[in-house]
Image (cartoon, rainbow, N blue to C red; front, side, top):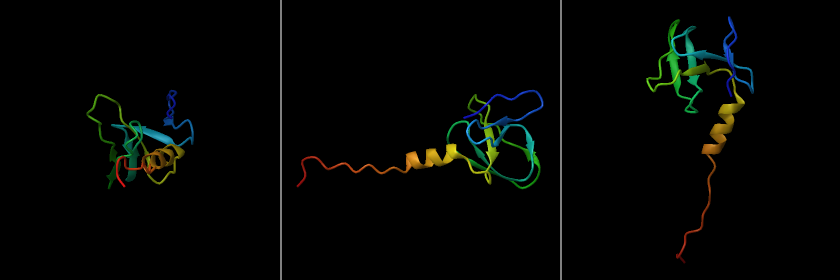
Length: 91
């Protein structure tokens, strides 16, 4: 999903080329989604400020919430699949 940053360039999603921002980076006000762990946790910034750290030992990566990403849609579809299983031993 993510590609490595080259000097002077931000990371980008390999699938949809959406810019990614690391925790600690100063970004414009707006909504951002965490994408490195698949949680898509939303962070709302009311002014230009730093994106929050993850405090889980990983460098959190975020993308602007307004930018659609195929990775997020696939994750949402996978978690919303309802599997119908027949009840065993019930009539």
